[in-house]
Image (cartoon, rainbow, N blue to C red):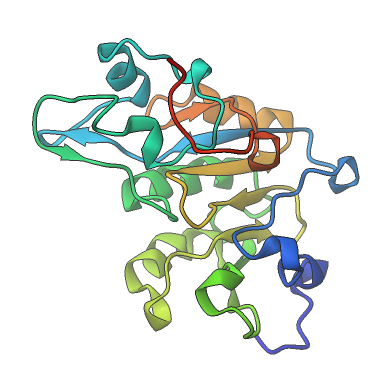
Length: 214
């Protein structure tokens, strides 16, 4: 998109200094009633394994992890898994996770799968350059994920033109944060094909090295 496109009013926020890794809409004035995290897919020996199952096998609970949801949450030294492990994608949802997330979002969007959306990259991918962004349909997200235009990861931020929901994947996290109406978040939390959880937001996590409490 050209520099003059305000991206439904979000461009100034995405270009702000505190939005380099990913802009998180925490202020009440943003108007989102609820939020949750969608965990990226974890596989062992080719089989999808829920994070909760993997952690339980190592005597851990996600509720005890106070930090952001990165690969460190299922770190192989603290959460040993037997078998060939495919760890969750960093910085972007894997394709299966993304495709299902799009299906759920479509049910809560004005024009369903054809809802007009913006997709914008995190500034860390090209600090000092204009935010790389484009407009498209919601159901075009999986194809954009596959194409990885300009060699970039799937955009950190995406939202519909009416700003009824907002999706963020921070640069080095293994989960995607979704903000929106209560019905959308309830739908995500109940979805059998996604592993959606409630967990503190990025701004709410403590400082220091992320590690399991002993």
